[in-house]
Image (cartoon, rainbow over all chains, first blue to last red; front, top):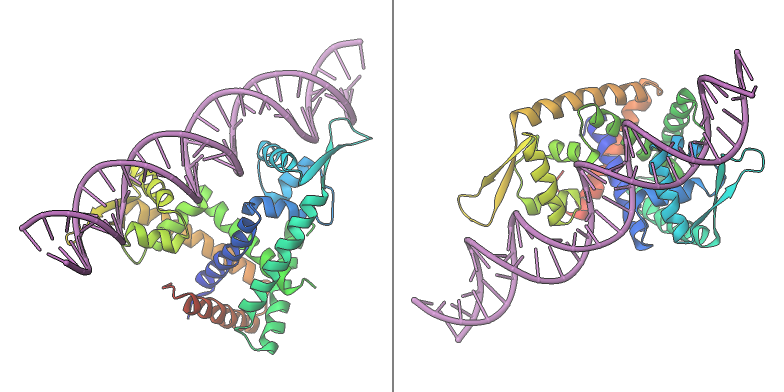
Length: 142
Length: 142
DNA sequence: CCTGATTAGTTGGTGACACGAACCATAATA
DNA sequence: TATTATGGTTCGTGTCACCAACTAATCAGG
């Protein structure tokens, strides 16, 4: 049996691989699909995106510019602080990220089918505890 | 509570983040630490590495060349097929990957401390089932 | 044994994407 | 009003992804 550490790492690589594959189907990279995922339910500033994606702010500038060039997102200047922009999902971006999410859901469902139903429920609980516990500890909004 | 899908994705991002941070401490990228991790217990060919890392073989050429330039790995020509090279962990590479693995183990241990001991055991079992089940299905050697 | 096909790995080109330093415009503070 | 801090961008540099094309070596078939 895999150790805790190897198990967590291997599972993470596996899930990343599924996500990358689905992102690639829409001509997107992993970080692009993460960006669009974040924008599904909020309109963060560049700084906030940098924090959420754990990237340098200059990386976020490039990432958002390339996504904007493809019509996936748009930048909205703040009305209260002229230094600030908020990033918003464009219609095309929403279409792409929803389609990707749907395919990825199929992949995860198929993966979890390796477990009996009761174990899936147990896993969901444990994963939720880890993710929300970790986010709490780091002061991150999911 | 997070859905199965969001939970798996968030957990994967979290674990990747821990790994990336530890890799960066040794001046390594995620894919570099993955490469060294693979080389801990085998000496694969370039083709095998391409398969394990799910990368184009030209990407593996670059990755191995950069690692070789840093003294982390070395290429050994095959004695049975002059087209083939096998990639081996060098002493420095072994030092780096063991140190990284140790730090990452600490991170994972701390993360799992969010769960009671019985749940950790349960999680390890479930994760093992998923990872080995998936590998079996894909015909992958872990 | 020779020839054509296939394979292993490399090279070159291209674009994405990471970071750090420096910059400009704007906001906040003294 | 002047100074400091902040938000985002630009520029330079290096990694890293893929694809096409290449070279050298191996394999299969006649």
